[in-house]
Length: 188
Image (tube, rainbow, N blue to C red):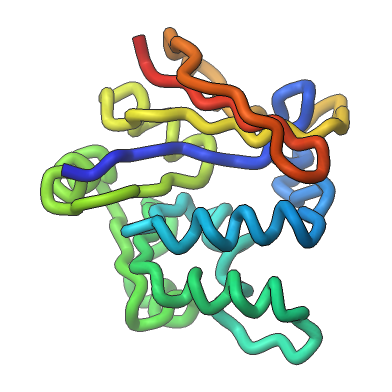
């Protein structure tokens, strides 16, 4: 059975993006990026909501300006199987924006992820606050990972989607490069 974690970079005041969805948090420096590269190697499956897919899909596109650390992450990201959960993206539109090796779940992400969790060995990484709220409310998330950056955004899209108020217990805290603190929590 897979281990489902929801992990995102987050500001000190709890936001993962600006109100319009644009990522305005600092780009990880080389040492932190290496940490994420090593982490990506251990991911068995990446699961994205539509908006996070739009942010992450550029890693699958060639970029001659990408440095070696970024190129290494791109290679690891490309080799990781991916699922996009989106009720608003129909299959015909998805064909234009989803590579052949990315699976679209258009409805009932909770039921699909329940089955996928049973059938997948290893780390299943979820990205996207709304998707994480749906999966967390269904009891499918085993770990919440907050990569807290030392910045304040003031407003934006919160790590925990509106109405999702899980009861958590701290598993660990670790200082990473770039003064990022990783807090890992499990549901109570």
